[in-house]
Image (cartoon, rainbow, N blue to C red; front, side, top):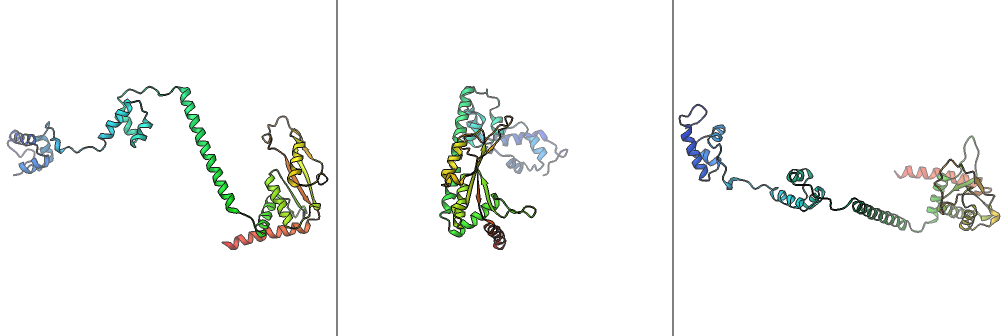
Length: 285
């Protein structure tokens, strides 16, 4: 027997049977098979208004989350806090609790700012600790340099920071000026490796006139271990009152220029070694 719209004589009688079966606890599929009604539109019209049996309702996975989200919101938690607690999306939380009153702020504005600043301070401290640890690990991994390693490092340093010869300006001499004490220290170790005696080295401090000139001169003299006679007259940079200097404070000591006399041959060796490093890097690939 086939039922379709316009092709059945007793719709109300069929509906009574369908409702009775529904109230007995049958599912839609079971009623369909029992009454041989395979037209979904008619089947749903026969059962219109009749609730489904409890056993046919699938439990919704989010029901528990929905209930917990409302409980947490009533306890005064924010959307972010509920999300961290339950692991669900903020959009879902918003739908579940939007009818609930907005909780009173847990902290005053001053307390909120204080907590935020404390959190930022902890974050910066952790990041600083990570930076220091990374640098320490990298430093310790280098270890003691061999003569060859020191030679290559010194050549690369000089080629980056030192005076270089140009076709339009012959400068075949060793000169370097820098404000970093570690750069100066490595450069002096390199010169010592190359057999440059201290009597061939000359030094000159260059610094802003408004800085601690005497303190800078004493610092560089102590770093180099050179006598006062090895230092030329300090070059003072004029201070422009319209310029706001950032290189100030106890750590600002100007720059130190290091000159090596009779160094044309040494310069040529350094330049040749630099291009040897470049070619060596190409071959390594």
